[in-house]
Length: 215
Image (cartoon, rainbow, N blue to C red):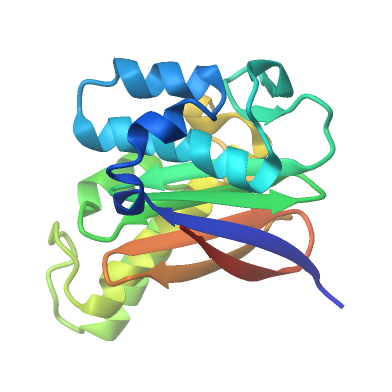
């Protein structure tokens, strides 16, 4: 039987009008990031990160959190493992008993040159190979996805890689182009969110995803 990873999804639009009340109950670390952010979407993402940690893991104080060498947050008492990600109006939180990584990305922002700069060589080559099989005679170098299916594949590849980097705790301090083997041994589950986002989760064990929407 597969283990389970809980993924909590928050649409920060639901927090609007409640910011002043919410900011009083979340960890000061995230409250300060919310106040300092200059861009409205970033302000809401930071508020959402603090809120989702409060709602799911009961985090209200900074001392409940610690940070890894490259900035990955974790619970100081190590009672559970978690990973945070945000994009657009969404904040997602993955919770597990073992190290886990989660990433959410817009399906609209990826181009071929961006993928080439970031993805492991084997991942990038596979995307090009699938493009040629799906659309024989197409322009292999076309920057934009050539089909809705390709758009989802690109987002899945990107979020899969970043989810593993988050689970490891390195983020992009590890260069995926130079360390192809870092993906070995990781189990990844992915799913689309609305029509514009892809979510991927990575863990060292086979797992099923249980999605939870927060209000």
